[in-house]
Image (cartoon, rainbow, N blue to C red):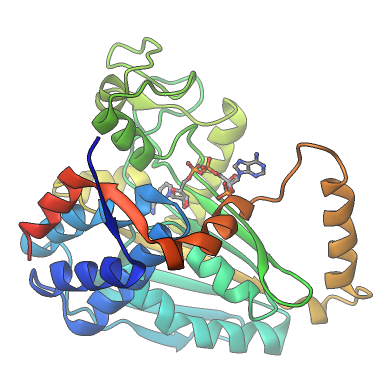
Length: 333
Ligand code: NDP
């Protein structure tokens, strides 16, 4: 497949341009471009420029408010609420973060309840940003129904991901971020685009038969990872982001969505814990010894290390995106 090489600066500028010329104000365009560029920088292709056409579709048809101005408030000592104003999630997350950090440092733990946003991105940007501030973080988001519950054959849950981040001694973070489905939907879309098979167990066709054809899975249903264990996590994420926040479940998000392929409306929950409040002796140092023990085994790496390795090269070497994607985005600017 023909590729186009772009610097990270060009990635950011292209994203800003495509979003600004199609209904986003400057601040929203910049916030989304930051997450798109971070994904390209870290080699997380399914959340990089690949997402821009979907964002633009939903901006143009009015599903997403490109001028959304999220408002963050402290609901109580430990709970921060963000009204996303029907806009894109990155700006809502940014506006909630300072209050969440403040509340976690005051109380030992705090939650940020984000409502009325459209989330289309990876979750590690939000958890990593808290870990570099010295906080342990978790984030959860639900999505329209693509995944059958364990034992079922019809889409019911979103690919409902969760992320966890832990602060490292001397700065940085250990971060993992994973869908509760066997495969993230964006990855399946890329497999379909590039003519690759889906991994075993990724999904079933419309009749409920196992298939490796990503197009059939996208029409049928994805499956949770690890059978009922991933299914239980998908259920937890749906409860945390739907009923707990007073927001839509995956099924409701799907029913309310205009099915344009862009991000549906929904909520996100972010949790932050300040290790200094938990009475443990040197939690960060003890964690380092735990990581060392784990890494002593050959073949073991920490989650997030693949992305951190990509960060070492992409700022100088740039990134490659498919020529067809570049052409699609150029038609939007
Ligand atoms: P992956 O299966 O690619 O990776 C999951 C996690 O496992 C990553 O943290 C990864 O770290 C880690 N990992 C992978 N291999 C190893 C290994 N050998 N040893 C240790 N750790 C490892 O992610 P998914 O496909 O499940 O999800 C992709 C993205 O999609 C996520 O960022 C998720 O947030 C996003 N998503 C967003 C949705 C939305 O609605 N907004 C919906 C669903 C998913 P590393 O990165 O270093 O490889």
